[in-house]
Every structure is written in structure tokens, then in C-alpha cells.
Image (cartoon, rainbow over all chains, first blue to last red; front, side, top):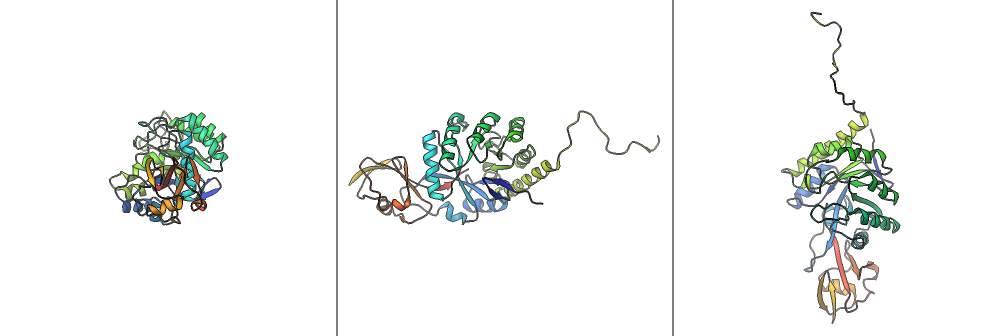
Length: 256
Length: 68
């Protein structure tokens, strides 16, 4: 049963995108990425330390994964665009996970600048995947300016609070002309499964895996959860009912 | 010697081109997965040997790192 995810014309067999940050060490990161089955992993773009530089993340990942650079930490359109351009040059990819935050404590997107930056980056030939708020209007604007997907948050980055507004995510998924990737706030496997059941096309996870007691095992759990949630979605669930409906036949009851 | 800002830090450097700047820091100018911007504009690696720096230039030298 093939059910590929297609983003910007690229076919992907994994619906789980994983981050490379906050693991206890490099080996755990590598083991977790492998257990996750992810094809795309994210990376940040940062200044080189002036003492020269040691083994790079890219060398470590050995060509096994598609690296998706992000503009994490950027709070202005100018910085986001420069970071994206530097990322394109450094990683030889025109894919960019656009993050433009309006609050350093909450890491909530600055919607106004996010849409502006997305528009400009699309014009410059980037495949833009924007991290955004869980609001159907913003997601539509991002799709309208040409983003290849939208990535609404489930809850605050790194918070593990799961999907705070499932109704909004469901609405976004129902209306979005581009793939929807739930990004941020996933805490455990059931959150990832729920995202897929609500209609998301993929899920992005970092902290929930990297900071789990057993990251490799959590990565495997996320992989299974995304698969299960997607299957359930495709299977079509029963509606929720307010009354009981017996499963066994009602005729031929003993003693009747 | 010219005074430039590299990754936010002002310093005097005895070099003129980006390639020379990288080499002076023990970075192979032919290394991949590296990017440079001067005054807010990316300088493509094909130009690293040709592009000369001027006093007051702001240089960003970046590479991919762990991130979510």
C-alpha cells in the first residue's frame, strides 16, 4: 500500500520529519534518526566559531538524509532572507524551513513578517515551508504566496503540550491546498497519531524525541504513531455518538 | 591591515580576499557546506578568491548546525 507524501514535486515515503537538536550526544542523535525512518531532517545555520570548525553536521549525516535548513532565531524579514540565502549556498538546496518569531519567550511566529518573508523567498526561487500559527487565515495567506506546505504549531516549541487546538488543525487540514505538517509541541506518540488523524500530511518532531528518556525508542514510537494515525485517517473512523449501540446481535438472547 | 567585522566581532585582518580570510582561520577555502555574506549579501564561493574586503565590511561566515 503506497501512500507517498509529495512536497514541491518531491516524493517522500516518510511522513515524519525530525530535528537534530538537543540530543544528549551525537551517537544518540544518529541512532534516533535511523529509528525514526525520517527522510528529511532539519538543521540550523549558525556562525562558525572563530577557532576554525570541527566535524560538521553534514559530514555526520553522511548523505543519508535530506537536510532542511531553518531560519530559527530570526525575528526580521531581512535576517530571515539572509539566513535562507546563506543556507541555500551552504547546503546546496533551495528548500527552507522559514521561522520568523515575534516573541523570544513564546517563539510564536510574527505572522505579518512571516508572510512577507515567505512571499519574497518564493520570488527568489525557494521552496518555502513556513512554521506558522494554527490559524486557517494565516495558512491560506502562506499558501497564496506560494509556500510548498504550511507547518502550523501544535503548541509552543519544545513544550510537549501536544495539540492545543485540534479543531483549528482539523480546519486547516480540510482547507489547505498544500500539505500540512504539524510542527512544534508534540510530546509523545499519541500527539503525533492525533495530528495524522486530524488530517495532517506529516509531523515534525524534535524535542519529544531528543529529550525523551530513551530517544531512540521514542523515535521508533513516533514512526509507528505517524503510520498508525495515517492509516486510521485513511480508514475513516466511526462518528462519535452520545449513546451506546450494542455490538452483539440483540435477537436470541438466553432467557429472553 | 584592514579593520572588518567578522561574525559580529571587529578585528584587524592582514588579508584582502574571502579565501585568504578563511585560510587564515584554518578553514579550507574549498570546503563545502560553508557560506559567506558581506554586508548582508551572500558571496558565492566561486567569487571567494576574487572578492576583496574593504575597511568596515561586515562578514558572516556560517555553516549548518544541529537545529529543529
